[in-house]
Image (cartoon, rainbow over all chains, first blue to last red; front, side):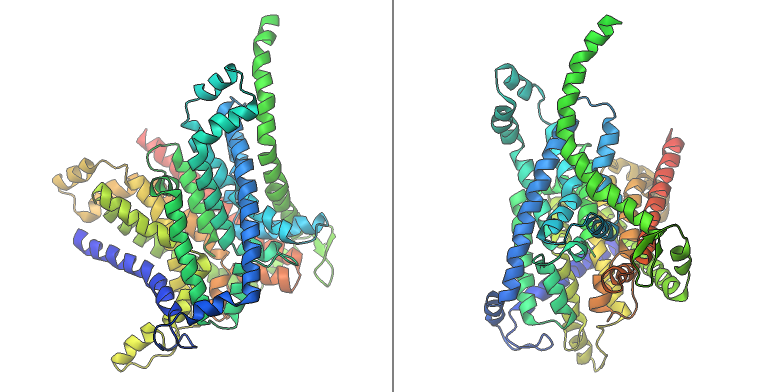
Length: 279
Length: 291
């Protein structure tokens, strides 16, 4: 039985990589249609880099990603600090509130954001997309940073304060250097989540807020072109780079909650945030 | 009395800075998640004019409309697709996890990395790959052609939608199961085998019950999220058989029928809450049994 299941596992891994390999291979296809092979060429990469409207949406997505991830990391850090450094009454309640966006199915959250912006008379723009992506990634950044701060020796910031550090100095000289890798992980993971998000963007983007996934989605509705495969290959490369930047150790901790028991909530949040992006 | 108050003071001062730190996070969740969802809940009970705009009042009309054939058909179809996706992801996720935990630590890391890459790859990329793979002139049909089988393009088709859904959720389902399986002492497995338990007994009575939290996690991450999918049916199913997600997007962005869309969204949200409640109940029962 175990041997048979070993083979099933191998087939599952093949299944997981067939689409990824196919996108990369077809991106080098010289033929103008995806349905036949016309030899190896870099033609579609050239085509991709001269596609003005697409590059414009790439720029929008980069701006949204950086700002949403930045906001989410900063707010997540503040919440994590409040929840780990102080004995707050009702700590579990606050953690529950902060991770609440996780249990709201993403499509419901998208609809809800559209509704609140409409009710409050806020015009949909790039700002509304940023706010939407920020709230989706907030539980993730908060939990990653909580895990990092909890494993930190709490006497260090206290000693720094006793030695006369102002709270700001305490942050720049003690807390930030000690949590830098977790901050980077939180930022990069929320950046990629924002960068590939399509559900929240569908409901919150207005004029000037068309993100790259929205543009690609509308292009795909009219039919696939090899240019999209070139873009896909670059995005796969980008994913691999991000994983190595975050570091496999950290990545594993974040995805399955390895090493410390405290990380299991973080793992669940990662799975949910990313799993929800699987739309 | 006085000493008590005096002893409390420093704690309270600390709480002020804790509150300051927590305010941005709590305010964000309140304004961008809690209040918005409550508004959707409110709108789902609101009366609407002929154009679908909310005009206040209270009515159950939208929820009643959900039982109309058009809506009921989509909801039923979505529940079916979500069930199939969940069953496949759960079964394969269990098999893959069970395989990985038996490997050496180095091999486990490698296999996990191999799971993380597709898990983290852009969702649209993972979906449109199937258009090429299953489409006319694609590798699959060419392969069948070699054997003289002339098949029709699989895009658009329900098979393609099913495959893409399983593909989208599979890595998500592996991680929680693996996370709860990796803590199991290998000697437990050996003991079960030594006591004469076959494969099914070892897993049914020992491994699966211990991995229950992971299994429940995998279901939570697969079932309800599948209902909200809208990209896959459009790109791979030709937009004929729709999921609840498609209906919500259409109601909000094309028909601008907010109350109807709100009612449907609330159904998805309620299903999520029900699944969470069932999950909590199961884990509670399990805890009691262990104790």
